Length: 265
Image (cartoon, rainbow, N blue to C red):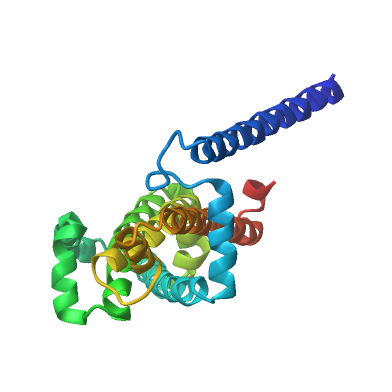
């Protein structure tokens, strides 16, 4: 019975995968046909073949990688700072409730500021280069990670905290052996959501003001009506977001294998 259920599940998954691939293939074929038959203007829609040709051209001319590398650096630095600071401050909030009461209103006020409104100010403070993009990524990511860490840490079971107290665990031991392991699911939820948000924030910042990066490339392509390049950059951003989320999922499995083996299983 169990073997039959397993086979049914496998067959269902294969069918779902087949439908997904068929849908994507039909969509690409429809785009190609619509453009080649001139049912849709080339200004509004690019065919898959045009996008591939543009990709090959940009690789040959080394046009894509310099912009891509800049955006990746901005995302990496901003996201890493957000993760370290968000998790660290979240643990401090739970360990020292008075600190949370003092700082939380300020955190809530900064979080409420619209990112579109603060971008001009960031440009004035940090210029149109690397620093302003990193700061905006931090604003996009930090608070989500912070409050996910606080929420997860506060959900630590009382029995675990009492047991740590019975064994006279220090504050540091309680944090690393009780609070953080309990908060891991919530922390990784925050990291997963902000993984895609970080890339979106960088592209938005680069579109507002930049000399390079994927957002700058989008603006440049729009200005000259290079539709295949526009679609290509959008695809690159989407793929980056998916890969980044996948990386966070991989890190979660590796970390949980050490601290939460039952969750991995």
